[in-house]
Amino acid sequence: MRIILMGPPGVGKGTQAKNIVDKFNIIHLSTGDILRAEVDGETKLGKKAKKFMDAGKLVPDELLLNMMENRLQQEDCKKGYLLDGFPRTIPQAEGLESILNKINQTIDYVISLTADETELVNRLVLRGKESGRSDDTEEVIRKRQQVYWRLTSPLSDFYRERKLLHEVDGLGTIPEITNRILKVLE
Ligand code: ADP
Image (cartoon, rainbow, N blue to C red):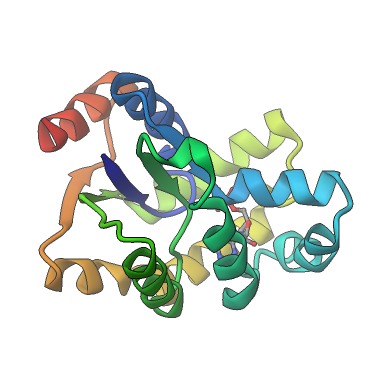
């Protein structure tokens, strides 16, 4: 099974992603996590990505597409995967489509978690205090929200046209939301 999980920053994608991949025994590919590992490892890609990430901006599409084209062809992706944080723009979605065509794969479901923006900013400010993530300050959080609504939310239409989109209410307890997602997938 191949799934794309999307939703605004703070909606709980990471938590839900983990619950879903455990259940279906597929791998979790979070481009945020992959990029943070590149930054920590001070790789060439990490050095390029860091300044965008710290400003709450998106890393350029071309870098993401190269990174994911390689990643999706690794052995562990054969059993299926959940994409978390990718694609994040229409060019990334188009790029992903052509990568998948090339390697003879298709996406089975796109799950879009929905939630109210004010609630999300509050949650993220709280997380920032706990996690110490360098992009979890209020200013950068607002920036990331704006980026989401402007660049990422148009992907809903892209995937609706392809009959892959399933919108799931992202407000509620963690197990409630997991169950809503599982109902779509089962
Ligand atoms: P969020 O909590 O905002 O969902 P992520 O961990 O998914 O955060 O991503 C953190 C940062 O990594 C983003 O703000 C962005 O700079 C970069 N990033 C992650 N995925 C992508 C992507 N698909 N395209 C461009 N930039 C990305």
